[in-house]
Length: 249
Image 1 (cartoon, rainbow, N blue to C red):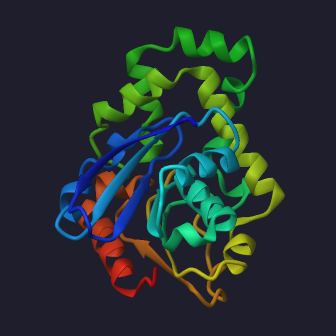
Image 2: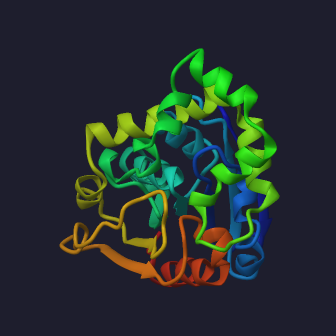
Image 3: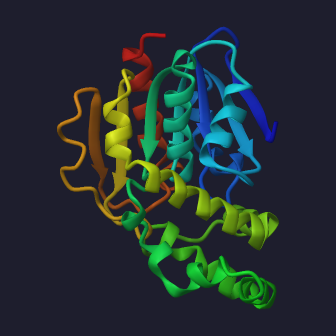
């Protein structure tokens, strides 16, 4: 198993699992966790993310013994979806924040930098030679314009390394290449909350692609970029608490 977790909150309360995004860590949820601790038993997962989306989903499932609300950010939203597909009895509801919904929806994956980083040799050279300023600038697309880039996210990317980053991004494309998100959610019985940032620089707005799904509610977070757990923790906590209130374990 390649998953660890930080557990906090109220023992005996409903379980909430928080799954981080690409090249990140459980620390990306640090602003949300205190807002949930009185309502939930919180499991903030740390994934190695060295394999497929399905592998990560199975690693999260190994941490669970009963149904939980699963919240995932970005790539973590795909892991949450795969968990619901593969282990439906361990999921009571899904909250998906800014997940890529097709391969084409991934703005940064279409750019030259991310493509170059996935190439052995060239990617290693670019990664090793990147200055701290360049690493920080690379994080700007993850936040709304004007947001101060948190050191947590710069540190997480550095710690992951180029090969882990490349493997993680390939896993996203493989999962979405096998089935886009709307089609996957259409086959799930669980209630789903989908939220996208109005100013997301990494994932295209989905338009009406999810509107016809019977168990799915889609909303846009005004003024927010790609990382709602950091930029809008109160709004994210409210989404999770609202989903807890309607979830049926």
